[in-house]
Image 1: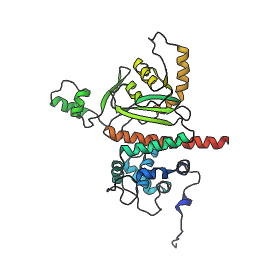
Image 2: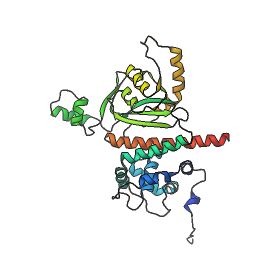
Image 3: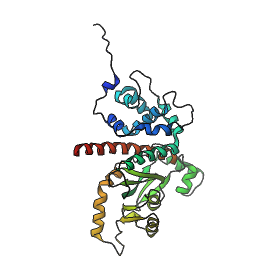
Length: 321
């Protein structure tokens, strides 16, 4: 049989209703261009360009892939090539390029990109931070603690706790956290503020697992508005901090509180319920070691989540138009 040659356009290979097309349609990625151009010219992009490399990293979190899985995904998937602006036959980055680019981009510029997206969402009236849900969840680091325990024994430490772990652990910023007095984990804690109008993520913060939820909440408070929270955030100190920020706390009261109103608590729980699912579905295993790298991953996760949510909101607008 004779070999047949056919000219194919990558643009035509990606379906018109593909989710990646919707991402490009709802958000102008050129808004990140000025920030990406600030990246110091070092080895890492290998001629691929900062904007294309950022789209690769974003795609990694949209699809929940490792660096090696991302390398293969972009190399084999035509829609991924289109989204990251690679031609059909062009060589795509290898897994080592992604780590180098993350190091070049850094937390400061990524935060600037997150705030740029947030600014667009506010300008379009999709986010106002007047009604917000705030909660914290755990992030378990990649460690089994057996080696740390053996090292602590060798150094004659009496206990393996947050003080000694910082001296013997590979991830020196991870900590032991506790919830409810009987649920322990080793790693970090993430707090998020979610806009109740749209379900978009307002802001996020990460600390060691031993930091109290109230201190985490203080890091993600908006400037004004009503904050819905669970009973873990009932505190006189927090209420004073909220008054300074012109915020009103709507938190479920603890059972031993004298002014507890069960009907009002059920009302608060009802309004918080749809957003609780967002916290339950978050990634619970840390991608990296160290607070900075995991905060980088959390910011990318928030950007990717907001893009997905933005597609849903735009689809709803078109349906009701």
